[in-house]
Image (tube, rainbow, N blue to C red; front, side):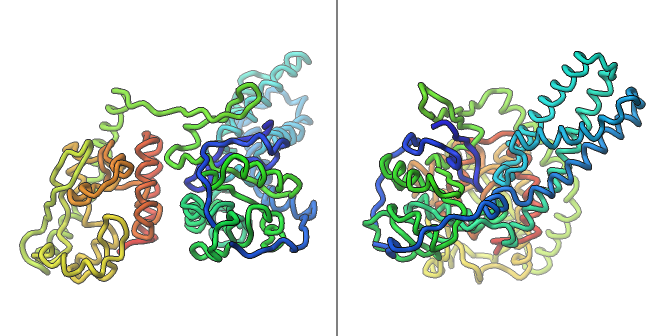
Length: 512
């Protein structure tokens, strides 16, 4: 395969096969077959989007980032002139050329491809590479032409343009995410494969509409008898994937790799070879971030190389310092709030402001967790009577209108104020600011080996599952978020989760 790239789509790793010229050389990571009769669309008319539609779908809204980039480059040149002076006034006529050269470099590096907007880190790397290459070419040209342009001015322009471009791209990202979240930029997307991975992809696209892909239906094997999967229809079988494009108007296809064997993947990709749609193939490695997987050639074959993170002493110490500084600072800031919460609980429901409970931490070690009491006294006694109303799956217990929760406790839970005392658990070292949810002992007793993997790190006050839907998630999805964190945790990821926590709390999505 000559053209493949690895990226993220929501929380999944995918290999982009859109422009791959040799569809037969696909990446086969599994041979798990699908199992399933579907709506037959064999006689559906063939469908080919127009060139204009293809350009709009793939590059919309490129004029917006281009306009921001123009402003950023112009501002960078002007700022450099203001700081070190106009060192080359006789070459002012080149300023428009510099601006156009930057836009051309950005275009060549794929920075106006809408699919890049799904991955912020990849976009930042492309920005740096585009500006660095252009700066190197500019310095070489200035040296050969002996123009006398100041190296200080050149370096300053490079740094300012890079910084301003990143800021402008952040603004564009926020704008595009808002438009996509409202359904204005969503590309109709078919999911090939109706197994667990395919269903999970559909749920992720439904939750993360900001990525710009809207799942409209499934393509499944001949043996699959289902007409719907979740809330989406089954529109075709593997051999009729082109007809499914005509029926749904889809502009993208995502292949759930674990639902097909190597031959089926090759057949699907071959059928899509002449269709002007985006084609993505999942890696089948949901617990690894795209940064931990690289596509590398091996004698002409595209191979996935895994880059596993190692827990070194320096990383452990850095995370501990992050937790201590973060938890200590937050405790100082929220101390007045905690005092008011404690007073409200004491006045409305009597003694016992702090609730203590045994939880399971890193390595299966038990510890005592601290929370503000949100339930009536003796809540554990009536838990058995409420099991029939359990709304959660897996080993969890959740009901939306839990009668054990007090009036004050209801508001505390909505805003997660009941969890503020866990900051002391972080200071003590029982927990971390970011990590998996701390489970109860009876939950751990029912864990499978797969689920038990979430105990390899300290539990957290917040985590990926909390900022990705909380109680809206199924048990399997919530475990996958935790395992993703276990495999990929870093200070950068911790900081990103912490930054997403406050907006998630304000949105109150999935909270009860």
